[in-house]
Image 1: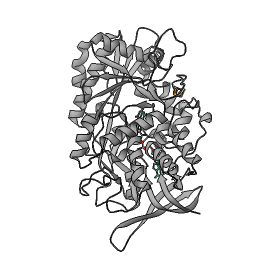
Image 2: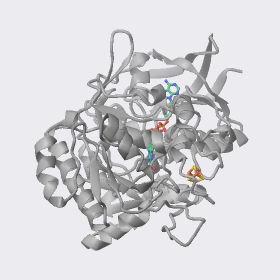
Image 3: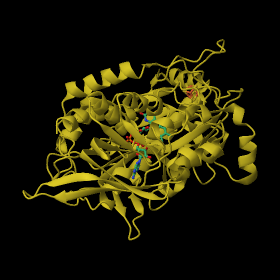
Image 4: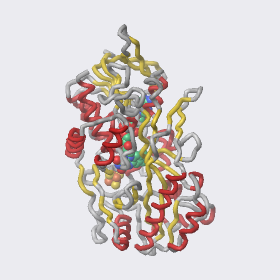
Length: 488
Ligand SMILES: Cc1cc2nc3c(=O)[nH]c(=O)nc-3n(C[C@H](O)[C@H](O)[C@H](O)COP(=O)(O)OP(=O)(O)OC[C@H]3O[C@@H](n4cnc5c(N)ncnc54)[C@H](O)[C@@H]3O)c2cc1C
Ligand code: SF4
């Protein structure tokens, strides 16, 4: 009974879509997930309770040098349970040529068709603009501040699309939606896969992939071994799909002795940056509504999006020490906030140390910091144009901006990654696609080079940064990958 047509490891954006598609095609599927299978109605509006419950490493995952915090989910549904449900198609005009240069020539029409099918299934619609006279707003007032500031500068800013239905704008998306209004994998593709007969096993610890070399030299994945509630289990399958996310999938492959000729764990990259808070002269109550709602059309290499978080997460990103920090937090209701994100080149690595612990090697080099400073200036300009009394970029040293003339201090005080509180929710790469086995871990059919039946379907596939929020493109690639997996 422990033999399946397919085992999918991980149940986030990639794994959730893969499990649903394979089960729908009639395959007997096992989903093996490290995190817990949560009942969403039991999610609490309590940051300290939820972060250890559904975030990877309790929200404390960082790069090896501790410069960058990297957020990911660890629960059935993966990062889609904690994400902001922003649905952004990648700009295929720029992304596909960059991927092609890396040896990954993917069919544009197929990706667009996958986006369209998913948008239908996940109820993707534009977020409604904030209206001060409407007590049933989805968006927080920060959306209006952001749009007003952009308009005052003559810049274009737009409301984003999202995969929510009948959202009541409670603002707790990053801790799981207890009202099932965010259409994460936990409440869509995973239960849909179960309806088609898939088995979902949570709390699978210390999972490894078992594989062998066949007489013709090709490799075959045979099954998995893992510990659950202290007992060791195994399961076998005709095909295995690794969807443990960027970082997790490379670590899992390496921990299973699978290197794809040294390509696993290479070309890791991220879209990340810094948050900027703006103190407004009025009560903004930015927490009251969806936090991430608007995007600025500025430099093509910089992503600037409005954001707001409940008080715990907000306090971590708000600069200032001791009494200064307390005084600022007392003004919590007066703040608007937004993020500046820039892409890193695909030159990071995921490795395992001697004890088997994952090491994330990723740097925001000087040119990336320069780009970030340009984004911070744009954002500060935007908030001053909207009437902000002060702007606080996420720096370690005091850098309170009260006027655009203060920008000289930004240039002086921010020189490198140590000067900013850097974070990323969009890690990518590590098992990148390339038809050349010397330039990527996975071929254009999503199969690990050298293997017959071991596939990857998650953000680790991206050969170059998509410079956009990742979930839509992860899901679209997984949708396409499922066709290759099924016909193996
Ligand atoms: C706070 C936050 C906000 C975000 N907001 C947005 C947004 O608004 N829009 C957007 O487009 N993107 C957003 N993202 C990013 C987006 O959610 C991710 O890019 C996407 O979910 C990645 O999909 P994935 O399948 O690669 O990985 P994940 O969704 O992270 O899923 C990986 C799964 O694998 C499991 N796993 C890992 N290792 C193992 C193992 N060894 N054994 C078994 N299971 C394992 C994990 O527990 C996890 O459930 C956000 C991310 C975060 C963290
Ligand atoms: S803002 Fe909407 S989607 Fe987010 S947690 Fe609240 S009800 Fe759910």
